[in-house]
Image 1 (cartoon, rainbow, N blue to C red):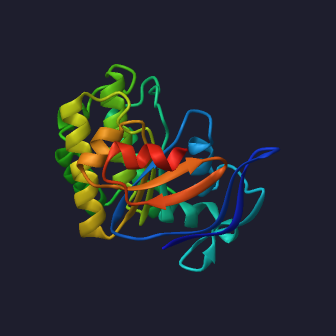
Image 2 (cartoon, rainbow, N blue to C red):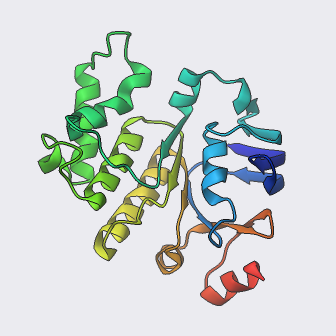
Length: 231
């Protein structure tokens, strides 16, 4: 689904080199590594928010650099590490922004769009927040709303930068279980950066490990295996 080919990622200098890497549909990948190794930069590069230094990232043999903004919005949803909210923007209005790639110039949502927003809101148990301002809810609630907006965008690829950072253990587990279910049932490719290694191991996620300026795809099942990959 997503293919890297001789890809160099970074700003003025290369942070990560990826000779070859294929990410498949139907899976949730945990992007892990030490602080400052380029995890957020990788996700932003995959979302075409940062240009590549060299090489390609492709979606089913189509180079992302050749896609328009609207085409990208229908292909990849991106959840930033923190959403601080916007004054006077309600949670419902924020969630409805996820349907923007599919609406007309007027931005009017169809009944089908509205029903889908309600469906995802119920799945993530945030219906009680819909009328509240995005600045009036907690950091954890805003993070769940950000994930909901990405799901509402209904893209085959979802990228998430520390989506569980502000959540308690129960909600971290519930969210991860939901993402695994959605990836399998809807055949999506979901990549999330995280420091929550125990949770990823318990849920048997595939790991994308960033170490020494390279990426490796590993099927680790213990902390010891994972630690050895960093050495």
